[in-house]
Every structure is written in structure tokens, then in C-alpha cells.
Amino acid sequence: MTDLVAIARSFFAPGKGLLAADESVETATIRLASHGIQTGEEMRRQFRDLFIGAEGIEESLSGVILFTETLREKGNDKKLFTKSLTTRGIHPGVKVDLGTEPFPTSPHELITKGLFDLPERLAEYKKQGAVFTKWRAIIRIDGDTLPTAVAIYENAKRLASYAREVQMAGLVPILEPEVLLGGKHSRRRARAVIEETLGVLFSALEEQSVDRASVIVKTAMALSGSDSEKKDTPLEVAEDTIAALVASVPRQVAGIVFLSGGQTPDQATDNLSAICRLSKENGGTPWPLTFSYARALQDEALGMWKGKKENVPAARAAFLARLAKVSAAVDHS
Image (cartoon, rainbow, N blue to C red; front, top):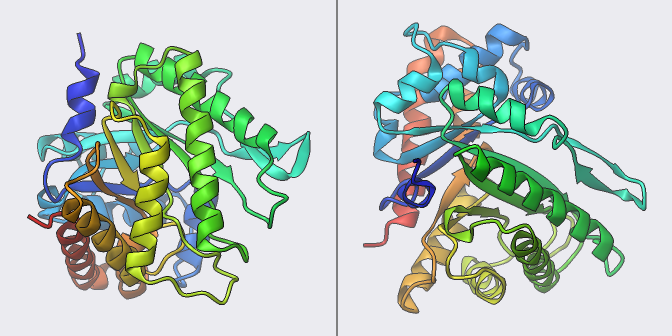
């Protein structure tokens, strides 16, 4: 029988975290186009290979979240990406939600879809080598109006249903209720929404008898909205983020991973470092902490790569340098 608790805890080896390489076709297209790179299936494969094929990533990565098409793809070394990762001791995982749709009760909010045929898809992903999965919900802040309690609850209920199905399939679930950075809200407002969202989520998990010990939570940091005038210091971010998590996340949870959520690579690194340092200074949090970054790890490399084969060595060097900095931010030993 698969020991899901042991697998979930294994993501938190000292200095190691996750690369989120699970951009959908639409998101990958936008990401590549923003760097002047042509799009299409082959270019998306090369985009994945740029990062997954880099030598030495196993020093800093315990897992990579993949998009479904990537489970079937091979790197330039002719090996399946899943096999390439597994042979280096990195867990391959997959994003299993099917994106968002407007919430009928509150059309300015979004709910995540993908539960309908989830058990069948999970069985297939497991055959293809996935060890863990991820489901993302989107929580938007707009003054005191959004998020609504009903939208938080609906997303939490779906996250809990997803987690139960994933555990039944013998896979580890990552639950990502992302409180978005966009908006004019204060850092304190973000802290309150993160705390409320996670509180509702864990009530829903309890209702559906989900084993919290093999659950990983992927969360945003408590940050002032990107449209506000406030520039938070790393210490401010650390204090409010840890306070929100301690108030809402049960100690049995396997661990917490942070998303970068629109922060620059330096911001995401500095804020993560401050969170982990403050945790250590205060005797540690009840659960281990690490990163699960996409853009914060990729953007510098993509800017160098530009889709050209001759730029791959320099782009990979930039990626590995940023990965080393983020890894060091987690490991303050």
C-alpha cells in the first residue's frame, strides 16, 4: 500500500521545493509570447525541456508539477519527462483541475471545475507516472465585497472532494486556494482572507474525511495588493503570513508550499527567506515550509532563452542560479 504520508513529507527535504511547470496551453502561450517566443506544441515541449532537462535540478527540487500533455512528452534526451524526473529522485506530479468558470451566485468570482471524470483521469495519470496532483482555486479580493463567503465555501468544498478522490487513487493532493495579488487591498486584508479561506477549507476537508497528514497546502503570502501604493517589507510579509497560517492550518498537515503569485523573482526569494527565517527564530512552525514557484523561477531564464537553441546553456545557468537562491532561502540551517 502506498504510504501517502511519507511521500507528502518527502517533498520537504532541507533546501528542496517544487517547480510549478503546469501552465495550461493558454497560459504557456501567453507566457512564451510575453518573451517574444513563438507558440505551439513543440515550443511548449522545448519550454518544459529547458527546465526539466537542466542538469543538477535534483539538488534543489523534490517535485515538479506538470501539465497533462507533458506526462506524454519526451525531453531532448528522448526520455519521458516523468522518467527523467523519477530517475533523479524528483517526484512528477500533475495539475488535475480543468480551469475556472464564473460562479453563478457571484459572477465576479470564479469556481474551479474538473470533478466530473476525475477518478478516471487520476487512474490514467498514475499509470503515466504521476505521484502527486494539484488543484487550484482562485480567491479574489475587492474591498470588503469580495470574496463572498459562499464562493469561498464552494471552492473549499470542491478542493475537499478533489483531495478525497486523489487519496483514494493513491496519490498525494496539493490544495491551492490562491488569494490573488491583484487589487488595492492591504496586507492585513490579505492576511484575513487567507486565514478565512484556509479555515473554511479545513472544515470542508474534515466533513469529507480527508486525511490531513498526507495533504500539502499551496498558499499565497500575505501581501498588499499589486494596485495599492504599499510596498511591504519582507519582515512584514513574514509576520502576517505566518500569523495567518498558524491560525488556520492544523499541525497534522504534511507541509506548506508558497506560490510566487506575480511577485518578481527577487521579491519571491526575499519574502520566502524572511518567512523561513522568522519561523526558525520563533522555534519553527508546526509544519515544514518550502516553495512551489513558476514564474519566479522561470522568467529570468525565459528572457535569455527567447526560444533559441543556442541560448539554452545561458538560460539554464540563469535558472539554476535562481533555483539556488530560492533553495538557500528555505534552508537557513
